[in-house]
Length: 302
Image (cartoon, rainbow, N blue to C red; front, top):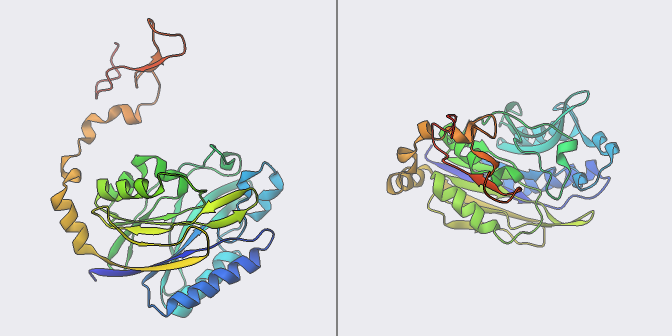
């Protein structure tokens, strides 16, 4: 199949109301099912309030295994409507071991893929004290489209979308729980254009705890053009028709994947600051950080 019908569900989650939030998500899935989507995407942590804005280990109780109530309910909806759903939860893999995980659930109701957030945030939030970061960028097949995921804060690191792209992604989903920030559209446009992929961030919206989430879920095509966008202040759903031929055409027009030079990117994966040439300058201010000669041979003495 050369096209994919995509649905994004933007929603607010209520505090201390997991079952109600899951029921709301299921109701929205029922509604968008009339549009016959091949793939439905839910926001990050759609099943509970964004508790990671607070330091309270009691919030660990919100973690669920893949056999828990939330994913079990979404599996039933995927099977009922014969569609694929991407659902992201605070996953308990085992006692004391937690991840922020996006599950791919197929039309048969079975889990056939998962992505674990690579960069737990610790800028405004406190995600790092709650869960670990993943290490892989899997790509799955949905109706002939190669689909990857990067979650929320992952988007601030261009390497994440590029890793998914190099692994074959033509569409990159972005489950989000993000407050409003001024470069939202520009960030998604850039990630889509520089990788020649469709980008589809799906955000929370409204007040949760002390944070107001920004909404504005959108779909950007491989040329960096916004083809659909939700509101910034209410629950919303958007539908977009994606065409693989547009991916191929964009990559021919802007051949960044052809012109990559991974053999010279050693400083990006060097394991210590000396190798990456990030150290205190001997001639500058004591706290000045000076990047020097960041080349593929950066491990050699300066």
